[in-house]
Each structure stands twice: as C-alpha cells, then as structure tokens.
Length: 163
Ligand SMILES: Cc1cc2nc3c(=O)[nH]c(=O)nc-3n(C[C@H](O)[C@H](O)[C@H](O)COP(=O)(O)O)c2cc1C
Image 1: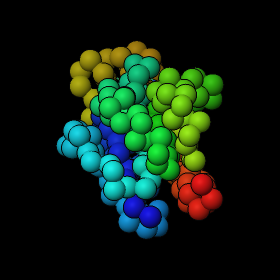
Image 2: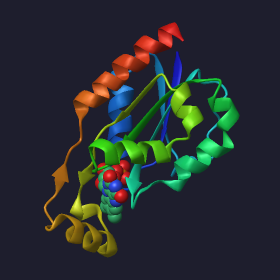
Image 3: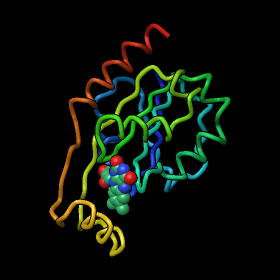
Image 4: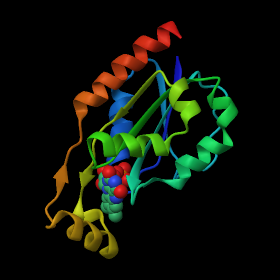
C-alpha cells in the first residue's frame, strides 16, 4: 500500500512523529513536509496520514489549507489523523476536534494524540515569554507518547486491511 504522511511542524515534534511513523509502518511510505512541499500530489496514494501541532489553540494553517484544498480526494483515501500538543484529556480532545473537520474524523481509520514537547532552545523570544508565563519556568518538557504512536500504527494497519 502506498501511504503518504503529510505534516507541518513548528519546532520538530510533529516532524519526529512523522519520521517514527514512517519507520514503523509497513509498505511504501513517503513523508511530506508541507513547509517544503506546498501542493503535494496525492492521487497515487491509497492512504494518507495527516499530522500537525497546536500553537495558541490552533493547528498550523498549512495543514488546514491542505485539507480544504483536497477535501473530496481525501474522502476517497484511507485516512489517519494525529496531533501533537501539550494539553491533555478533554482539552486535547477539543483541540483535535477543532483541528480536523468532522467529516474527515468520521472517515479516518486511526486517529490519535501523541503528546508534545516544550523545547525552549527552539522558541523565539515571544514564544519563550508566553510559555514561561504559562508554565512558570523555562525547563524543557515532554509528554511525547511513543506508545500512543505505536497503537496508532497498529490500528491504522489493521483497519486498512478491512476498509
Ligand atoms: C508558543 C506556543 C504555543 C503553544 N500553544 C499550545 C496550545 O494552545 N495548546 C497545546 O496543547 N499546546 C500548545 N503548545 C505546545 C505545542 O503543541 C508542542 O510544543 C508541540 O510539541 C509542538 O509541535 P511542533 O514542534 O511539531 O510544532 C504550544 C507551544 C508553543 C511553543
């Protein structure tokens, strides 16, 4: 099965998740960074995995725009959706629901939250100020969840055989 992992990442967490996914998935997998490839051609892929992260409540516009432009084609593919963010529980779930349209979420065969990372060395001054105020310090933190990523892969592969 030809699969494309299409993502946008601000500080590298989603990029790391995309690479890990490509290593764990079987078959022919291509990783596409929307910062480098603005209008990827997706017709020849049977499966598409979309990923982004949350900054100030919103997923990257590059991902949202890609979804809008390809809405109809995406509904003909096997779809996986993931999100990286630091909020957990209901807040994370609400962010996920805001990031991906209803129609695409219902159509997806696997979707998950992979947690996130605060890497102060990669933040600009404004970002550092915002996160320091919110968090109370400038210590790097990670909730990145490789187990959730492996479960996502398992479900994606299992369901792609039946759908
Ligand atoms: C300036 C800034 C704002 C953020 N805002 C949110 C937010 O609103 N909700 C959330 O859950 N995580 C938030 N995060 C955490 C990011 O989602 C997390 O750092 C994620 O790992 C970023 O992934 P990326 O490097 O692929 O962009 C924020 C991080 C930064 C630096």
